[in-house]
Length: 260
Image 1 (cartoon, helix red, strand yellow):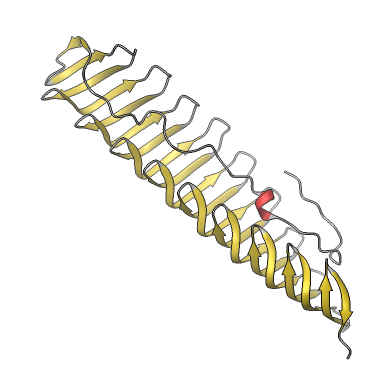
Image 2: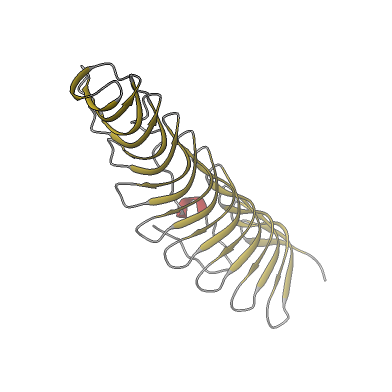
């Protein structure tokens, strides 16, 4: 991941959304199709007991049956390579189970009516791992996702996106904690950098936007308005030696100093 670093006085926009590319493929599971026991019973008791059914499309179920329906514990393998092993109720995945998707994702957790519902763990082929709540096959509720390179997000999810309150940590120690909206830092929050810089205020689409305070480890403090990550509008810059620059800023530069 790249981060552009410039002297504090230029205040280049630092878009957290660009630094946290956590967008993932849709969570709709490829092995959620409700099944019917209709097919050829190739072994066992496929009415009430343990049996194996093979269907014309090549899918195969091996497990428990009750009154002609898939009920209890069993494994269903699909033609595309996906599979489900776990609990069933009236031909539907329901209870604890493991779903392996054709794209390599693996979900282990609670199922309801053929969808991930409740608490579970999703691992991705690239090594990312999500642990948390699901609703109708999507990440919704509280959850944590961590990537092999150290990126981490912990907080609220809605419809498979980071939404609500949450905090993100990036390789090297960069952090954001606060409000999120549809996958991006948006609202009131705190940004911090390994060198000691700290911003407290409003952000929009991952950038400092609105009223905020930026504190530098050197003791320099800016308090005022931001737009698209840069000082924009009224603001005051204070130095440790007592110097003060106040007035209207544009693109990070003081263009209309206020007479003192």
